[in-house]
Image 1 (cartoon, rainbow, N blue to C red):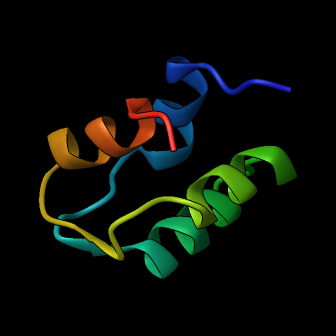
Image 2: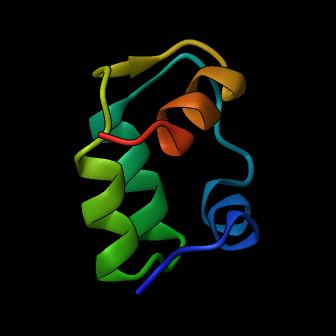
Length: 63
């Protein structure tokens, strides 16, 4: 299952930066993100995101 950018925007709406990966996952979970989305977020590097652009880059960079 893939996660669209629109879905991620819905799950992460209102998020304040900087944000740790753990807080990012928790926020998405509280906003109804699927298990696949949570696994995707848990696998991200680095452990903290300073800006939305940094998060977007991590989401679009192949691992």
